[in-house]
Each structure stands twice: as C-alpha cells, then as structure tokens.
Length: 184
Image (cartoon, rainbow, N blue to C red; front, side, top):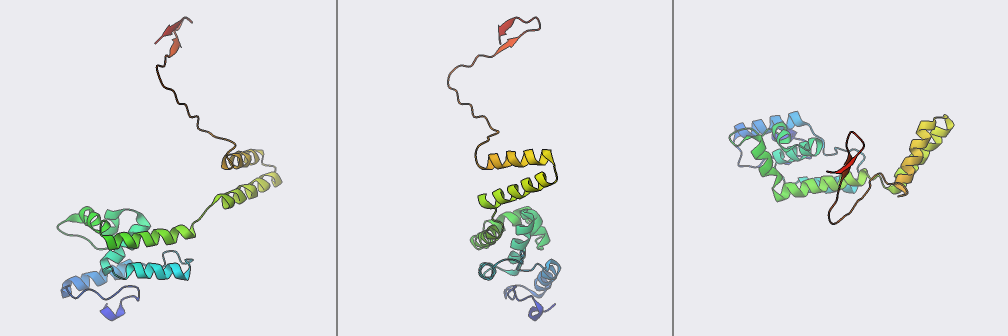
C-alpha cells in the first residue's frame, strides 16, 4: 500500500519515519481498516467533529484511539494499533493515553457517542409502559408486576436501598441456643 492509497480519514505519515517503519505503519492501518464512523448513525456535525479531533494525530495514534473506543483497554488498543518494542504495550498505552491531543480525540468520540445513546427519563418511562401493555395483553402477570415495579422505581416511589445513619454506640443482642438473650 502506498501513501496515496491510505483511506481519506488517515493523513499521510510524518516525514520522520524511515521506509521500514512506514511499511509497518501502512500494514497496521490496512489491517485495522477502522472506519471513522464507528457509529454510522452519527449526525454530520458529529462526524465532522470527530474528523477534526483525529486530524492532528499520527496514523498510529488514530488507530489507537479507534481501538480504544471499541475495547476500552489501552494495552489491547496499543497491540492492535501496532505498538510493540522496547517499552511494551502497557507503557505505550499509558504514554498515548496521557497525550493531550489523544485526550481531546477521546473526549470528542465520547461526546459524539453519548449524544447517540441518550436514554433519558421519558424514553425509559415509555419503554416500561410499552412492556407493561404487552404484559397485560399477553396475560403475563409476572411481567406486569415487574413493569409496575420498575415504573414505581423510575418515578421515585419505590426504593430498594435502606439508608441507615446512626451515631454513637450500637449494641447487638443475639439469643443463645437456649433462648436466653445475651449482649455480644
């Protein structure tokens, strides 16, 4: 693969790479074949923001960011992006993850994906109501009770967690085997 055959989302390699490193990098990028649009249903402005966030990065860093978004594992992303050598993939992942330009790219990806996966109160309530209607139509009592429980929790009418706040001494009294209470 030559420089001119790189995908449009990957800028040309920096000039400081020797031909061997360039060939290795091109092989990694060809193997990665990661599209810019990890989520094809992103809005055009989000895709443009991702392109802008990735553009200052070197091609291997771009591949690392894309793999990191998928796996959330820095060492795995480094390995898949082609980082090997003296420092090891964990050290490479740590170094890459702490670069400000990589942090900006990760923040852009996270923000774009968060917009796409919004599941707010209204959406949750609507889903539970649909499930409840289905449960009643199919005469599924267990599902009907569960959907009512989830709806009550969502609206704050039911809480599974008991919060106990106490200051001072606490005494536990345990009955022994013969029914006599004793302080323990």
